[in-house]
Amino acid sequence: MEDIIFGIRPVLEAVEAGRGIEKVYFKKGAEGQLLGELREICRARHLATQEVPVEKLNRLTKGNHQGVVARIATIDYADLHEVLAAIPEDETPLLVVFDGVTDVRNFGAIARSAECAGAHALVVPVKNMAPVNAEAVKSSAGALNRIPVCRVGSIRNTLMALKNEGVKAVAATEKSNTLLFEADLTGPVAIVMGSEDTGISKEVLKLCDVQLAIPIVGTIESLNVSAAAAVMLFETVRQRILAK
Image (tube, rainbow, N blue to C red; front, side):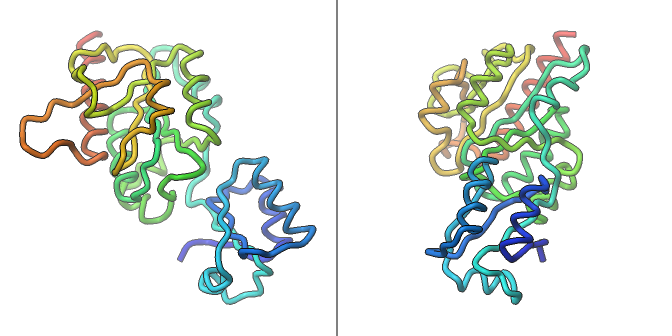
């Protein structure tokens, strides 16, 4: 069972102390000064929240939850700026940015490929993202305990900041006419992977410097997102090895 904190004061104290919170569940329609204060702090700190029926909270804990339950993150999230600053000068930044990947097994599999490829970090949004839970860690073969995971409030703002730092935003999309093998991936790169169903959102796609398609020879139109991420990552590795 995942670690949880329940009750207004304990959750408020955990949030204020900076503990790694995966999501905060509020009883739908619940009001009160402390609950309002907690909601505001969660918004200010870009924490994932959800309004749920009381039955959901009762399933999460048998204790007196007072209308709020928080799920503790399985890992400690890293600060993206600190991760970038810590990359050695003789290494070229390689990041994987997630835009709507909601299946924990896909997320874990991508994390495993990213760690094997020497990626420096995974960048995940607060909302519309697979939880970093025990199943994700298991699916990653432990990679999520080895590679930094940076949680951000806005993927769009983060991509713009990365681009300003000289990192090329590379979108993996089957809709592109440019093939993966035609692109130069030897410089600083952030590979953007989209939703299992709809791919990368239009808003994020517009921010990407280049859109690349993996050539498909068979009759199925596209790869699973975790398989596509592995292809993108190791083409990057291949190019960088040859460039040395």
